[in-house]
Image (cartoon, rainbow, N blue to C red):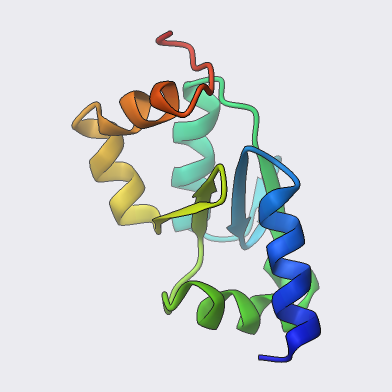
Length: 111
């Protein structure tokens, strides 16, 4: 990954408290995994920034090496990489996602 792509991704992650690198946009996810994370965040009423990796091949490849995680979607909260769809779903089901968001000062429907 080029330094400029790395810097762009750092800037995107820093630009919002909750950032989801996904296929498609929140209103129209282009894969089931992205859709499931959007559904969880929307259900919790968490404001988040969706980044469509399909519209930017450099970010699509760059985010994988940035996080050292091979798949998309990828969720970041206050600059911290949480994981992909399976991890987010498991955290949500266990109540850990709501707790983490609350700990980081991010309001959800449950707080």
